[in-house]
Image (cartoon, rainbow, N blue to C red; front, top):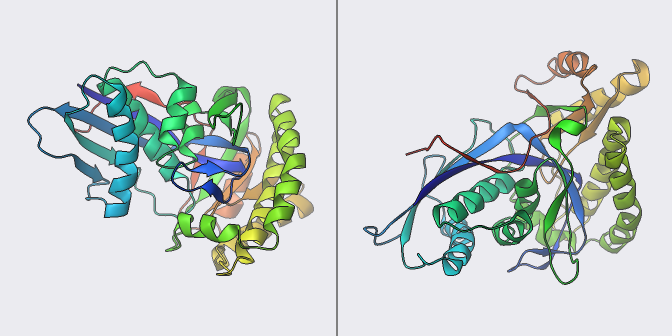
Length: 322
């Protein structure tokens, strides 16, 4: 009754903001993301009849009460579906040693947790159903389970789940990731988004950009994917900055990188587009051919960066953390 899984953090391409139901983590609208192969989370789950309580460690530390509640929301749901519902679990989860906010690790963490738990409980849970379960921990985890370029449906025939639009290997996207730290909690930004006067206009705008992004993905069009993700970034942060709390998630380095990306595009004709989720960390999307040039220029501004191809769906692996 032990299993390990690996899932990849996500970069939002058409990002979700705000929840119409916080307990079930149901969003107001569909959203699209791509998994980042350079940002894997590995989680091992083992059920042991000798344990008297669940033991949870995330990156070597005990989670806060709020974090533990989110973990158990996923684990308990799967326990109820199994014949081992009374057994307690030992859970270990680890991200790579990358410090940054807005990198999508909650997505990969809960996706890996859900898949490892389901396998340890001997559940044959398909991707759409599993994406609905892991959504209880983090909404974007639904897309991390599906992998590649995926869409999370807010409400499709009464269900909210994710499915893959295109595989990781089918689109020649490459991303330079600049991790930047911040203390702002994502849940705080989501809660404040609905208080912005721009939130309802964003919902109207999404009716246009979602089909355009789906079309760009279906055509394997890296330029359009990058351009639309940059457009959506600015729209998202306009909402974030105009909520009641006025959350400004960029920091000076974020803005420097954004300006450099635009300079590369306009002055050197290098295909590059920035993308930021709810945090200051920056994803710079480009083509495989241009990635080395983009990396060289961005490295003049940032000491720490990663280069990533798209990542696949969550998967069971043989190597355990304990």
